[in-house]
Length: 418
Image (tube, rainbow, N blue to C red):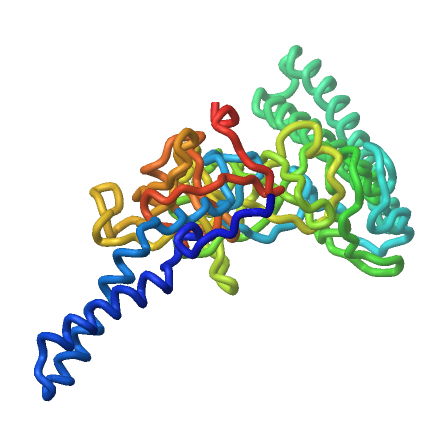
C-alpha cells in the first residue's frame, strides 16, 4: 500500500481548502445581506472571516523550542586562581655585600659573576707590601716598649732596696713605681698595635663567608679600593625569594605573612606557594613604589635559578578563600534582582545557575570581590559546587531549559553534581 499523504493540518499548518470554504461562505452571506453600495463593508467582513478561518483550522500547537547547550562550570577556588599580578625577580634570601676591611691596590681577582664558591675560598687579594711594613714597624715598637719596661723594672727593684734601708725618700720610690706602671702600659699598647697590624695584613685576602654564588663584581685587577668599598655581591645558598614592587594605591591592603603565588616566566602554569615576607616602610623616591619580598616555600624554592623573571599573584585580603569564577560568567546587575548582598559600594552582578535536576536556569545576584586578569572572586550569593553558566549568559532567560556541557562539549549529568 502506498504511504498516506499528510494533509497540511497533519503537519501543523492550515488547510487551504478550509480557508477557501470559510471565505466563500462569508462572501456569500455578506452579498445577500449588504446592499450594492456596501463594497467597503464587504471587504472588511471578508478579512475578518479569513482570519477566523486561519485560527479555526490551525488547531495544532507549535513545536516547543529545543534546549540549547550551555557551558557550565562548578563554582570553586581552583589551585590556579588568578589575582593581581606583579612582575618580580628571583633573589636569594641572604645577599652579602663583600668588601675588603683595609684599603689598597687589587693584586688578583679569582672569581667572576656566576661562579660558585664555598666558605673560605679566596675571592681577591690586595697588595700586602704596605701592610707588611706597618706590621714590622709595630713589632719594632713592641721591642722598644719592652726594653723600656725592663729598665723600669730594674730601677724599681734598686729603689725598693734603698727605700728598705731608708736611704731614699718615700716619694722617690713612689715616682719610680709610677714610671714602672707607665712602662707596662706602653708595652701593652705596643703589643696591641702589633696585633692590629698583623690582622690587617691578613685582611688583604677577601674570603667567602658562606657557600653561594657571585651575583655581582665591582672591582678589577689594578684598581685601588677603599676599606668597606663593595667588591662582590654573594647570593648565599638556601631560601629563594621574589623581589617585586607594590603600588602606592592600596598598599595598606597588603600584610606580612599574606599567602601569594609565584609563577616563573619560563614555566608558565606552574605556580609555587609563597608568603609575603617584608614590605618596605617607605616608598622609593623615584618609582613611588614599595619594595616587597615574597619567600618561596618548600624545597622547590632552593632550586630556583637566581635572576629569573617571575609573576607574583596577590589576592586581596577580602578575596582569600572566596569562590572563583571566570569573568565571562558575570552578568550586569539588574534593578529587579538587586538585593542587600549587592550594594553599590561593592562589586555587584549576577550569574546564571543551573539546577542539575531540572536543567533550568535561574538568575542569582552575587557580590564580587577584586577582578583579576581572568577570574573574579565571588564573596556572596553562591555556594561551593553550584553549576554556573560560564559563557553566553546574555542569551538566556529565567527558567529556560539548557543542556549543561563542559569545556570539551561533553554533557553533564545530575550525578556529576554530587
